[in-house]
Every structure is written in C-alpha cells, then in structure tokens.
Length: 155
Image 1: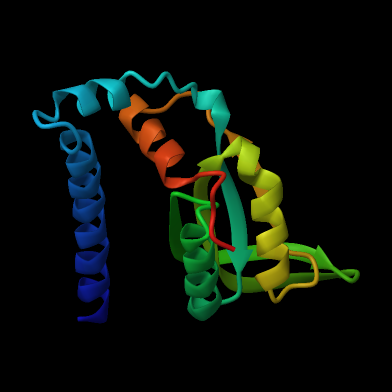
Image 2: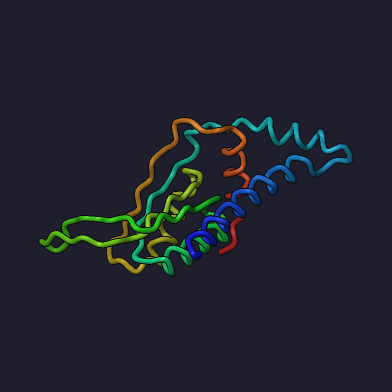
C-alpha cells in the first residue's frame, strides 16, 4: 500500500503542476488573453536548460536536498529514483551501494549555485554532480522551468 500511496502522491503532484501551470496561463488581465499570449511567446531555447544528476544515500537525504533546491528556486523539479545500484572504485576498492538518483531540472545559468548548495548539504565527501545539457524540450515545459527558477531566489 505504501508503493500505491507513493504512486498516487506522484500523480497528484503531476496533476497539480499542470493545474498550476494552466492557472498561470489563464491569470492576469481581465480576459486573461494578454497574459497567455505574453507568457507563451517567451522564446526559450532548450540549450538554456540542463538536467543535473546527483546520487544520495537514502530517501531522507533525497527529500531534504530536493526540497532545498526547489524552495531555493535552484530547480523547478527534482525526481527521486530509489533503488539505483551504483558500482564504483573508492579508495582502491570496488564498492557497490544502493542509492537514490536525483534528476534535477534547472537552468544552466544556475548550475554553479546549485552545485554549491548540493555540496553544502550532501553527506558524501565527493558527491556525484553531473549536468547534461538539453537538446530539445516541450516549449511550455521549458517556460515553466524558467518561471520556476529565478535569479530572485530565497536562500
């Protein structure tokens, strides 16, 4: 039942994000049309965005790090994927651990601030922080990432 609840909670968040985005498009001037046009005419290029991958040891760290990044407007969305098996060389020995993989959607211009925040909160001596640039993306989704991440972040 916990897995089912987790799935329902994830689906609720997805629906809420779509609803919030739709509300943003409808809001503003008396008819709402002017706002919709100005928001949707923002020209976003996929190369302004990236996905950052970070592995963490457990759900507690995944949750706190994800919340800190989204609340600080360094990320629009963070997906936490549990049960990732990582095999790596550390201090001369092959290690295997089960981790959570965070998939963080953000703007490339925020990478350095995001990296600093992750390093300050991460329990590993050497955290994995890897950014992959986007080549393509749904324009309204990219606009949502841009509007959800701003230079006027809370600390």
